[in-house]
Image 1 (spheres, one colour):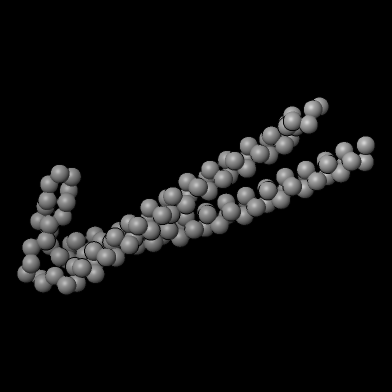
Image 2 (cartoon, rainbow, N blue to C red; image 1 turned 180 degrees about the horizontal axis):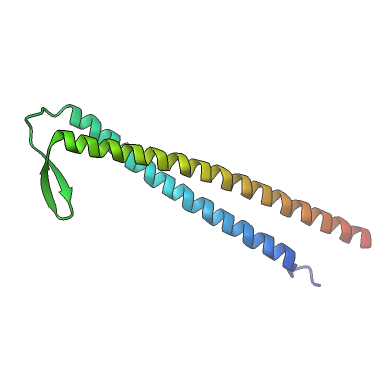
Length: 124
């Protein structure tokens, strides 16, 4: 076997590592999106507190604006905020698990490479 050829066991582990890293990146992107949605809902709720009850409020629905009550839009935003917080917690847990898996697999690959290189050194 030449030195540049990657053994099948290493190729398999590297593929697993690459998949874990891609999953981690996807979860991190989802988490950023959820956090942005959460911040937007919180900002909108804060702004709604300054709006008088008599003021007309409109909500964007597709390409049109629909008149809504302050109470109904506040309730909707509170629900959206709760859902976003829950999704954020789930994504943080997923991110933590994936980071641990990546770290463990990297350590496993390092150990496998060390033991193989030590074995090759002994044969020389």
